Image 1 (cartoon, rainbow, N blue to C red):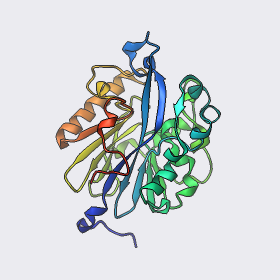
Image 2: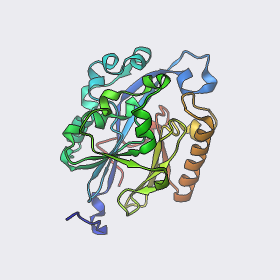
Image 3: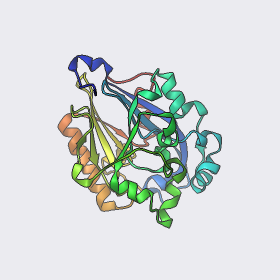
Image 4: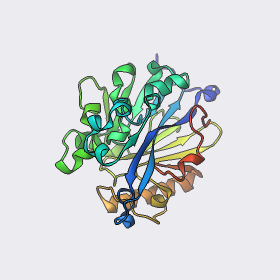
Length: 275
């Protein structure tokens, strides 16, 4: 029988933040206003682990382990244009071992979207034997029917393979509460991709985090003092960041932007955690 949530087990609920290396992007790829700048920016690649008495959750999973060995061979064009700095021990499985979490305890892999720097868990899904993969149906359909201009951002080798236990969220399931107890809610935030999700995490201490992921790569994007360069729809991206600001205000949450080299060092990283 599946174990029901017991408030007395609140000590089991923890949020870990991991860095899966950095991508050395040209500034013009980050901000539309920097179109003429060739300066490089080291963008961190976060992923998240949420422990819970009903099963642990990996959010995204960072880069595939192959990226630490040969990013150009695994990713192709993007890695040719933007160097990737990643050590083998920054991949998902070594990091789970470092914080003492059994891969068999992962009940869910929750995907914000399926861009190549977010599919590290799917690359090793065969090593997460009890995990189900939650993603929007829109994102799934996009990733499995790529247009030519989308291909550089996705790595089908990570996710387009047999044996992945997909669970697809429809648009009508916006705000999906994964555990039914308010710990993790999944909010639709399209713009960066059509099926993008961001996440609201409530911890036993009362602390709340909004994991914006690529709906707001930086705090400047969140606050609309800069416009992101890489997006599918500017109108949707704008609506999504305004939604994230409303959600953060309502719950007095701290927002974790997707790839902010300025804000990222201010967070506690694993093996430290928030509870």
